[in-house]
Image (cartoon, rainbow, N blue to C red; front, side, top):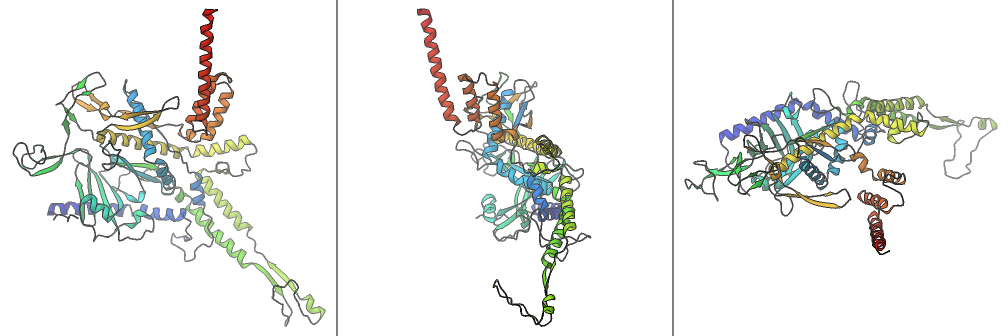
Length: 592
């Protein structure tokens, strides 16, 4: 293991600068971090109750009806919006389709469904969630070096610049991640064995410090050229200092600045080299341009730079003057606290109630478990004194208030019984029930729009990273209109252009959005039913026609209908036989 080099005073001052900035940013963000812990506690059904003054009551709840968990889970949408890419310039439509197909392939390859499942809870509970996009040089297929990587980041891990609420407008932003000591030592070649975990909370609420983990602090900032710089450290150990982290790097002579060849300067022969960010390189092979021209060997090609912070935010509901959106847990906190107290009060009343027996003085009741028990009395008057009193407290008002608070919380979030799939007494018909569910869906449409917009920004960032660093053609697969799989490659050199001044540049001018039919296309059972209805109505052609049936089963196969491929093959054989028979009849006509 390499030992850390002795730092210069300038390097120590630079780390101290970023440490002070992080401390100030945490202090300004302390209220939001504390709010996150409270929101997590509500979602997890914590039994602590709050006092009217905002403190924590000494008495805990005995029974928690967790409406925060229920209402959050009612809104979970497991679908991942698929990308839609549109060209800005004429002639770029094939490139837009290729980028769209590639991003769809990456969404499956990177298991976006799992990340989405986590964010479907984090976003409404905390008001937002984040993705971090990076280029992983260790990833990729056998014939490719590196691949884009997307990681889910909790809002607790993102510390913004104080006073700035949009990521693109920040001068700097911090990302706190928990890494194992071995991983940091392997990646950066430094000894971090003696370091501790400063922020175990970035691994989850209430996480305890681990001897195997270290908190890595990453600062992304705007450099003087407008690009993105990076400074990373753990406690008092600097891990990385790159003023232009998204630029490609090259080894140059430390004496004269000439690009080194195999560690030696071709000009002065010095072996002292250093790494610096480069702005471009010279072509070593001819590249055909889409306008019919070509870029020849020896021409200078500028390097493409993503130029944006590698962090994408997904908000729950937009809120002015705040980085995070509005949290569902925070807006129904009063109702949840009241329900916890009422649930405890109802438990206490019911459990303290019961049956009491009155007996004359001196008379005892046998307490065995026999069915017939002996009770000895002296005279009939003593028997008249024996009675049972049932003490059952009235909890109807408590239950009414509890249910009222529950309805208030649902009304606040715009969730109806029909939307949850429950019995809705206000919907007296199927149409009314459908209208009630659609009305709730309409109120929640803003959250879906925020989700779609966030995924669109994520797909655009992924494209920028692929355009910048994918030196080898990236393979991907897509389904054609007939349902068959087609295989192709994404080649970033297809995006090289020449402007009117004769300068080469990279074309990244595309419009990124998401496919609005993604929600419907993920519900295959509904699509199967719609396909049946359209087939029976003749939308695919005459019902008995073999070509109509072939188209019908082709589409069902594309929608993963069970055994659709086998039926399609049988219909194809029938269609082929019909074609042969029709050909024989046509050949017999001239002979007749």
